[in-house]
Image (cartoon, rainbow, N blue to C red; front, side):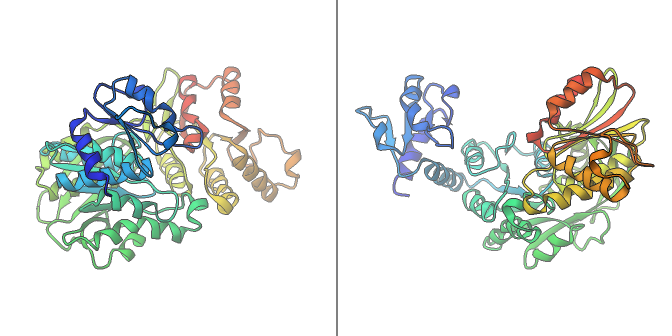
Length: 460
């Protein structure tokens, strides 16, 4: 920590900071981060040549007579400590958001609502890890009145590390589900890791959480915290709680909400696809009400928000109606998306589902369960992409057919089940689409981001 005040002086004199030489600008600080396939130290002099005021490195072999090179023990640690120092200097109230599903949508809805009355800084894109959180904090300025910081996790201790950097005053865990099981080891590991946000807030004199009352796992770990609650089926206990009721979701979510201290119900028509998004919206509403955003502004902010980045997007092409939810997938979000899609109106429903990654030993069982669900939802066609789903379909056929899996064609209706097709990768799907014309279909596209299913949209 001895070097951090010195680095902070350099930061305050700079025009900003970067970790990428392609984004170097005049007067910026360059932090030479290392990765599996690159070493930022090797680009430090290049950053200086591009106009950076200094370059922070952690490999003495790259030192020279240039006084603009600053040697530290570890660049990433220094970046994190600098971000925390900056956060403390400004004292901006911070809301930390994590959760298995919906944290990015919730973050954007919360920021949209708060921005109606407060100058709000928030995580852009998906910068929610050990590098992204410091970068987000270092973009804070004295003009900001509030910050919303998203925090992701794939291993135990990830959230603890991030909250110790960001030191949030308020916390939101959207939900807990079966994701990243390979890293967490178990569902209980997911709960413990997400709960590290609550653990930190217990150490803050005024630490407050916005609690999804519909998640029993969150209720069980929220004991002892000041909790402002939101949900669909609960009796508010304080004037700050917010409850909501689903009106419709076909395809867009429409609902109404009421603050506990308010006799009036407010109806909201969103551009969000999926009834599960009501929790995300109610969370943003609850935060807005707590910070004094007028109800009319809250409703308008929610109604004006349009999802992007393949998160519950409704896309009308010249031939089909697409529900694109291909940014991420885990057993919880996959099941929720499929059940919601099955309840939507629309003819000729079809699902293109990609493998769910990072499930470890639970992968086979979880993919088997999703295939069983797909077979029961009444979809017209199901295209499965990836080896995990291919094996799961074979397992399903073994259980439902007298024929061995190897003798069952890849295009097979199996009684009341949909027509199933399997593909090894997205390129095989694209090749099939060149031969098969899909028209008048309502198609859900859902899979882990690494499966790259979003690239199918132009072909549909």
